Image (cartoon, rainbow, N blue to C red):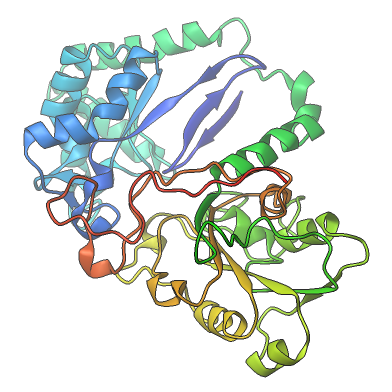
Length: 420
């Protein structure tokens, strides 16, 4: 059995065609105060059920097998200890029939500091309705503690029966008892040409064009493939690790091009332009150099470094230096297209006026060729913002429909182009 278990992704892949999915993190972790990981979501019950519960309704209807509980709290109560929302609402009201799993050391975090009273944490988590506990290290402590509480009737055996029944139901549905080991016959297809083509298509369709010249009559994109000399600059232009972001090969992601196979945006540009076009790569060029080098145009690729979970918490949401300086130096000297690599909207307003064309590329992953496909017009831009893009962080939280909604780019925004 191939079992990937971590705090942000839980999937069980048994053999070639059986997969048990997990809906997470239940519930409200996207609405925490100031967006801080593992923080408190302050909202009334109606808001919680209408906004944060929406994805779980759909997941359960479609037959999701597992639900993972969030580290966060709802109005001060830790979700891992919230019997009302797990045992009562999720299992009874929504009639979820799969099993509920904790997050990585999730019950430990019921107390502050974590693991302060582990006996209490076991009782609170199991009694709340969690069926499977993720214990990455000292599992014997958990087993001994739970066994003691069941034998002494602190936790009723009926609660254990419910958990076992749910776990066995999923295992039977997965066919684990007939085929307990993974089927490796399709391993050779991982990273295949067909898979990469699909990933490349996903990149093309997810790019959002935020600015394209000063008006519709003078668009900058698509870029001409035939040009005497072009500049490619930026910290993210030739960095596969930055394209992939966190939660990829490693938890916090990596920098560089040695973590996996793929195509950087720089390599994709070189493969797309006319063979006679000179492509000059300079990660952080001097403004005078840009002015004096006779470039037809420049492509600047900057953004966030990789992060995951708490390491990504930010109260300023800025692109770190030298990203802003590169934008200023290049776009002040030559016609430029800026491609932003990020896991979320970031501060970009101060630079928009100097940028000729602006693209939100999110985290395109290994297939950077999908970015070049659209920049140079082999395909058109079609993506739309799934999240409001703010002007300043002082506006946050800001959502479509708010009384004073004044975004830099609204929810659903995205300019389009046609293939040339």
